[in-house]
Image (tube, rainbow, N blue to C red; front, side, top):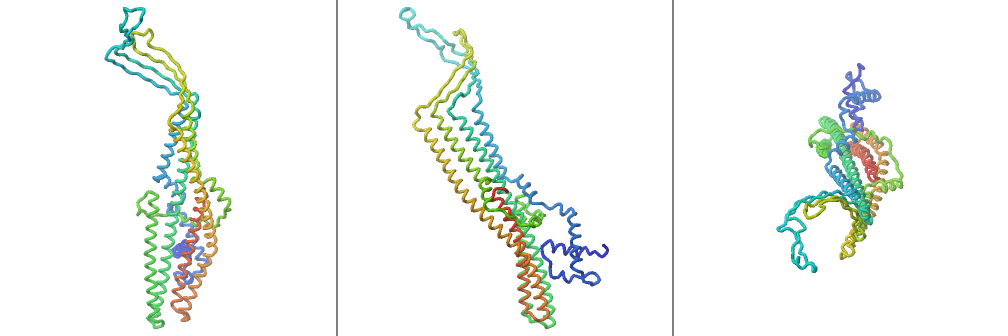
Length: 472
């Protein structure tokens, strides 16, 4: 290890991590001026990668899974959906409570202006004609306990419970949908940061390469080997490259701020993320018909709308049951302070039936309104099913395109490197124009940008496809 050049290995590691090897790597020289072979450089870079992987810095980088967990615990939309789900569960418990007996305690004090009395009118006893006979005191305490329970409600309670259960299921599906949407949004922001980081790295490499070429052209111009036009054209390209670098750095800061917003952090807080590109070495393939079937079964929008339609139908049934007989039982113990009664307390029990024979069409109209709402939600579900099928197909096609691009971008990057090397050699030998080198530099920049975009597009389309299929 005494000949191990850590600085050289670390520089190569950074270039490898960025996804490309600069042409200057072929002319790296050691401390004594000897050329360093590519094999040795690659071996040293691997050792450096292993050393860096064991450092605390790498362990501190956030993974996409960690980002999801953090966002789910602090997102306000998810929290609101969870509270709505709790509310629906309480409503379900309230509807189920209608099955249980109700116990009522009632007590009070009654005071009248006069002592209640009844006038006697008995023809056989004319002397009692008009005499007032008291039957209650002018002040009295009363109280009692009543127990009541439904016996038969024509399906009113059961339909209400079914409606509340459907609403609870709909809110649960909405909560799951909110989580899935949040995970996709966080993934887009996460990949956006990584994409912006690689764009900065590519722009830095482009600036360095153009700067080196500008230095070479400047030296050739000073010796009278090239025209001033070559120098000016190179300087303009360098200025444009630096402007592109500023734009790339600004885009990175914006991407980091957007990501920190999902994490609930200060916008200026540094962001260190694990590169997701290492997890997509092999393309994923899924059958479109299977994905469409999975989406119909798992998409939370469809489940939410289906449960909402069921809730309206059950509510309509519960309201319609109000036209039918309602039968219940009640009993209890009561006491009324009354000195005129031989017994002012006692137990009692009774059966009660209620049947609304005519209400002007109120119940019928209310049930019809709920049924119409159920049909409207069913139509919305059919429309959502069509949109989801289109979304799955679009996501699947985009993912197939991204996989196909991955087969081309690596080769294009290699060819861009080789083309640039040849253009530089031709220019140094006086066999090629300066514009050929600048075009080759621009082509290399585009090739590496295309490769990075293809990598992250494939990962993003994979997540979008999982979201469209309802499995994210």
